[in-house]
Amino acid sequence: MAALIAFLHHIAFLAIMLTLAFEMLLLKQPLTLATAKKIQRYDAIYGVAAGLILIIGSLRVMYFEKGADYYMHSAPFIIKMALFIVVGLISIHPTMTFLKWNKSLKQGVVPELTDAQNRKLRGIIHAELMLLGAMILCAAMAAKGIGYFGN
Image 1: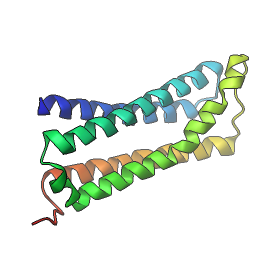
Image 2: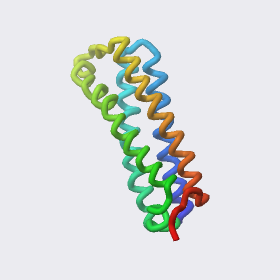
Image 3: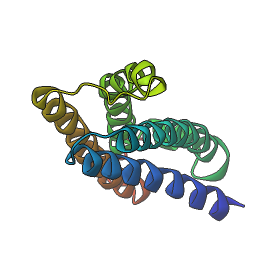
Image 4: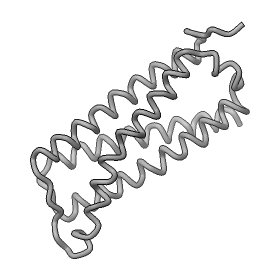
Protein backbone atom coordinates (compact mmCIF):
# COMPACT_ATOMS: atom_id res chain seq x y z
CA MET A 1 0.00 0.00 0.00
CA ALA A 2 2.85 2.40 0.84
CA ALA A 3 4.28 1.95 -2.66
CA LEU A 4 0.91 2.75 -4.26
CA ILE A 5 0.56 5.89 -2.14
CA ALA A 6 4.11 6.95 -3.07
CA PHE A 7 3.35 6.30 -6.75
CA LEU A 8 0.20 8.46 -6.62
CA HIS A 9 2.16 11.21 -4.86
CA HIS A 10 4.81 11.15 -7.59
CA ILE A 11 2.21 11.11 -10.38
CA ALA A 12 0.51 14.18 -8.90
CA PHE A 13 3.89 15.93 -8.72
CA LEU A 14 4.58 14.99 -12.33
CA ALA A 15 1.17 16.40 -13.29
CA ILE A 16 2.10 19.74 -11.73
CA MET A 17 5.39 19.87 -13.60
CA LEU A 18 3.75 18.93 -16.90
CA THR A 19 0.85 21.35 -16.61
CA LEU A 20 3.24 24.20 -15.88
CA ALA A 21 5.42 23.21 -18.83
CA PHE A 22 2.34 23.10 -21.09
CA GLU A 23 1.19 26.51 -19.84
CA MET A 24 4.66 27.91 -20.56
CA LEU A 25 4.66 26.48 -24.09
CA LEU A 26 1.17 27.82 -24.81
CA LEU A 27 2.10 31.27 -23.55
CA LYS A 28 4.99 31.36 -26.03
CA GLN A 29 2.44 31.16 -28.85
CA PRO A 30 0.04 33.89 -29.93
CA LEU A 31 -2.99 33.74 -27.63
CA THR A 32 -6.12 32.36 -29.29
CA LEU A 33 -9.46 31.20 -27.93
CA ALA A 34 -8.27 27.60 -28.10
CA THR A 35 -4.93 28.22 -26.36
CA ALA A 36 -6.56 30.37 -23.65
CA LYS A 37 -9.05 27.60 -22.90
CA LYS A 38 -6.24 25.01 -22.81
CA ILE A 39 -4.24 27.19 -20.42
CA GLN A 40 -7.27 27.42 -18.13
CA ARG A 41 -7.74 23.64 -18.25
CA TYR A 42 -4.08 23.01 -17.46
CA ASP A 43 -4.27 25.47 -14.59
CA ALA A 44 -7.31 23.64 -13.19
CA ILE A 45 -5.44 20.33 -13.42
CA TYR A 46 -2.52 22.02 -11.67
CA GLY A 47 -4.81 23.01 -8.79
CA VAL A 48 -6.26 19.52 -8.44
CA ALA A 49 -2.79 17.97 -8.55
CA ALA A 50 -1.52 20.40 -5.90
CA GLY A 51 -4.42 19.44 -3.65
CA LEU A 52 -3.70 15.75 -4.20
CA ILE A 53 -0.04 16.29 -3.38
CA LEU A 54 -1.00 17.95 -0.12
CA ILE A 55 -3.47 15.21 0.86
CA ILE A 56 -1.39 12.24 -0.28
CA GLY A 57 1.81 13.76 1.10
CA SER A 58 0.18 14.26 4.49
CA LEU A 59 -0.96 10.64 4.49
CA ARG A 60 2.55 9.50 3.59
CA VAL A 61 4.09 11.53 6.41
CA MET A 62 1.60 10.36 9.02
CA TYR A 63 0.91 6.76 8.04
CA PHE A 64 3.04 5.32 5.24
CA GLU A 65 6.63 6.43 5.67
CA LYS A 66 8.95 7.22 8.56
CA GLY A 67 6.39 9.12 10.64
CA ALA A 68 5.72 12.77 11.35
CA ASP A 69 8.36 12.97 14.09
CA TYR A 70 11.09 11.99 11.64
CA TYR A 71 10.01 14.54 9.03
CA MET A 72 9.59 17.38 11.53
CA HIS A 73 13.27 16.91 12.41
CA SER A 74 14.45 16.90 8.79
CA ALA A 75 15.79 20.22 7.48
CA PRO A 76 15.32 19.21 3.81
CA PHE A 77 11.70 18.21 4.49
CA ILE A 78 10.99 21.52 6.21
CA ILE A 79 12.61 23.39 3.31
CA LYS A 80 10.55 21.31 0.86
CA MET A 81 7.35 22.29 2.66
CA ALA A 82 8.40 25.95 2.66
CA LEU A 83 9.07 25.75 -1.08
CA PHE A 84 5.63 24.16 -1.61
CA ILE A 85 4.05 27.12 0.18
CA VAL A 86 6.08 29.61 -1.86
CA VAL A 87 5.09 27.89 -5.12
CA GLY A 88 1.46 27.94 -4.01
CA LEU A 89 1.62 31.64 -3.21
CA ILE A 90 3.31 32.68 -6.44
CA SER A 91 0.87 30.55 -8.45
CA ILE A 92 -1.99 32.77 -7.30
CA HIS A 93 -1.19 35.51 -9.83
CA PRO A 94 -1.28 33.29 -12.94
CA THR A 95 -4.42 31.52 -11.72
CA MET A 96 -6.21 34.83 -11.08
CA THR A 97 -5.14 36.05 -14.52
CA PHE A 98 -6.47 32.91 -16.20
CA LEU A 99 -9.74 33.10 -14.25
CA LYS A 100 -10.24 36.72 -15.37
CA TRP A 101 -10.33 35.41 -18.94
CA ASN A 102 -13.68 33.65 -18.30
CA LYS A 103 -15.85 36.60 -19.36
CA SER A 104 -13.97 37.12 -22.62
CA LEU A 105 -13.91 33.43 -23.43
CA LYS A 106 -17.65 33.06 -22.82
CA GLN A 107 -18.20 35.89 -25.31
CA GLY A 108 -15.89 34.21 -27.83
CA VAL A 109 -13.29 36.96 -27.52
CA VAL A 110 -9.58 36.30 -27.14
CA PRO A 111 -8.45 37.67 -23.75
CA GLU A 112 -6.11 40.64 -23.78
CA LEU A 113 -2.58 39.80 -22.77
CA THR A 114 0.13 42.39 -23.24
CA ASP A 115 3.72 41.36 -23.91
CA ALA A 116 4.66 42.55 -20.42
CA GLN A 117 1.88 40.47 -18.83
CA ASN A 118 2.92 37.46 -20.88
CA ARG A 119 6.57 37.82 -19.83
CA LYS A 120 5.50 38.15 -16.20
CA LEU A 121 3.35 35.01 -16.37
CA ARG A 122 6.12 33.03 -18.05
CA GLY A 123 8.61 34.31 -15.47
CA ILE A 124 6.38 33.18 -12.61
CA ILE A 125 5.83 29.77 -14.20
CA HIS A 126 9.57 29.44 -14.78
CA ALA A 127 10.19 30.26 -11.11
CA GLU A 128 7.60 27.67 -10.08
CA LEU A 129 9.32 25.01 -12.17
CA MET A 130 12.71 25.86 -10.69
CA LEU A 131 11.37 25.75 -7.13
CA LEU A 132 9.62 22.44 -7.82
CA GLY A 133 12.95 21.09 -9.03
CA ALA A 134 14.52 22.18 -5.74
CA MET A 135 11.72 20.33 -3.95
CA ILE A 136 12.76 17.12 -5.68
CA LEU A 137 16.29 17.57 -4.34
CA CYS A 138 14.95 18.22 -0.84
CA ALA A 139 12.72 15.13 -1.04
CA ALA A 140 15.68 12.95 -1.99
CA MET A 141 17.78 14.39 0.82
CA ALA A 142 15.00 13.90 3.38
CA ALA A 143 14.47 10.30 2.25
CA LYS A 144 18.18 9.56 2.76
CA GLY A 145 18.32 11.21 6.19
CA ILE A 146 20.54 14.07 5.07
CA GLY A 147 19.98 17.07 7.31
CA TYR A 148 18.12 15.06 9.96
CA PHE A 149 18.56 16.75 13.35
CA GLY A 150 16.54 14.42 15.57
CA ASN A 151 17.76 12.18 18.35
